[in-house]
Length: 87
Length: 395
Image (cartoon, rainbow over the protein chains, first blue to last red):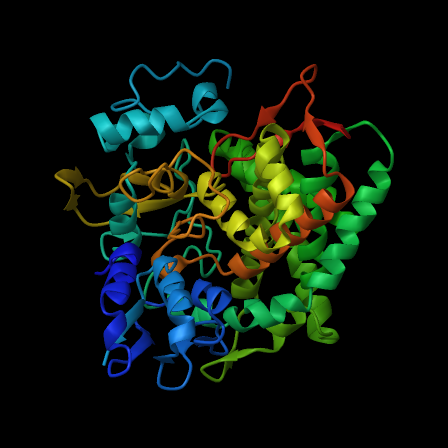
């Protein structure tokens, strides 16, 4: 598991690659218990279903301006259900 | 209860009803995390106390060895009193929880925000221009009682009755079996009458919803609805009352945090999370149903586990500067609402109530402090929060 700080370093360290690499967020549906922290911190990237469980919006792509919010969402999920993937 | 022998050693004889534990448990938990991370006691017919975040998480996630059927550690083991979903284990847990979740999403909770704000303003108006008040009795405790009454569709004036039951079930009832059972019987009778009335005329409140809802094409039984309503009432009141009280207690003593929060409204959401971490009110329980080991400690069937989310939240291995309140803490995976399948169904409601209560309070009383000449008291047992919080209002 990447911590908040290691993800931040990773992103900074790869700043020059951002033209080719895309960050995506993904909510692990099995782990999610509906704390709804991701939605509170990054509503642009996450939504809730009818039970209040989180899921990524669309294909989960994170525009560069929202990378910080993606990290916040990951760093505040008590169930470790928010993943940040590089594609 | 004054005759309880004081705990001789927190590692082998802990007692969460000990006045020292009620007053200031944090140094006790710090010591346990370092010396004996999973404590045990022969009291309460045998119970364990995991103090570290990772061990609390391990127990919370392990529904095979740890049952939720008794959610409170008591002196004696009463007969099982189902209040689904908090007392449910898999596979019954999931449908019992799913049926409640749609009523407690952030969107649904937003519908109750205006009434919550009104309630806060009414209470503040009642305090008026006085220079002293009891922040726990006159403010914190009144808010969730009225909000949950509003949601369930029962009279707000029944609040005194609700608080009596809660004290009897969660505090006095830990050691007094007769009081516990009497309170349970009274609550069951109270809700049986409400359910019967909704069967005749459903209405749009939560009781009406539960009477009408179908799970796998079947309606819920009256017993199920009654248990769920008792859960919502108990869990919806003194938990949030305790959280709001602890926030005021902190802000009364920390001028910098108080002024910062008053000046920077954008800080409110992360501040609420940090208060929930530092002053998490709720400790749950599990019953060991199959022998297992966690961190080298053997958990024996028949014993209870005191599942302390408050202690997990103060674990420095998980939270740097765990004993400091940092209003803009960036990484905060606190467990105030539990971990795993029993995540508090009312977490979105509690967050809204705390946020609105603090915003309204600070708008009316940006300056306040503890009254040094009056006594402050904490609750004991399952839920921790101020029960008397004498404050001096104004600069």
